[in-house]
Amino acid sequence: MRLRNAGWRLGCVLVLLALPCVSLGRAQFGSLSDSKIVAGLKEALQIGAGNAVNLTGRLDGFFKNAAIKILLPKQLETVGKGLRAVGQGKMVDEFVLSMNRAAEKAAPQARKFFVDAIKEMTFDDARKILTGGDTAATEYFKEKTADKIATAFRPIIETAMNDVGATRQYKELTGRVRNLPFVRTESLDIDDYVVNKSLDGLFYMVGEEEKKIRKNPAARVTSILREVFGRRR
Image (cartoon, rainbow, N blue to C red; front, side):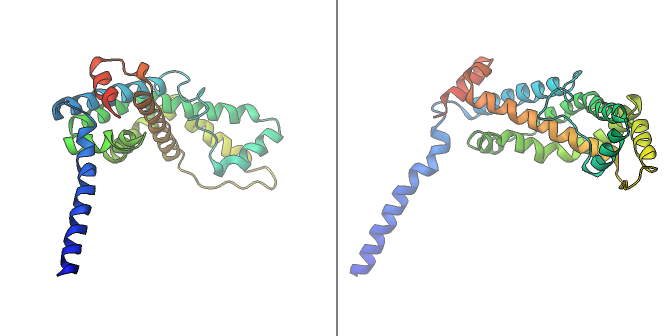
């Protein structure tokens, strides 16, 4: 009997200790309604994603941003060094510029996929994002949109690569190096490479915008953002 009573008391203590954890996620938003919390998060996502698309989808949005600039693929690094060694560095530079121009041209097409993901968001999704890490919303976007954006980006990148001359540059780049001694070229789907790097850069910028809204009051440019994110403790 004594052991049974001790066990019952221990169980009560554990339940009481657990109660604050159960209610913490909702309590941290005070008297805000679920609908307002979701509305605030959706607005944050719309603004953050919109800013990221605007920043990447403009001239030099990739090329002059050191954090996301698309560099020569690793498979072509030896090729690039070989060409620079024989005075063909300009061709390498033009190829790198062409890849970044293609990414900049394609980036605005991601906007509609972000909008769709925001519309589909549930309150459970919103709660997880709001109580998650600094880039929880970005991870949500990746989960919901990455495959769709990659599929949609492929033909856009292919067209953009042709428009800005990147495909031609790539063929010339690898073609000229075949005659260089001690340099071997590797097979590479250059369009796929640019698609993946474009997505990496886009999601990186979405993450940076999300961090601003979470941490910097000045980035909360609407009243509902200040109300929802300002309440978090």
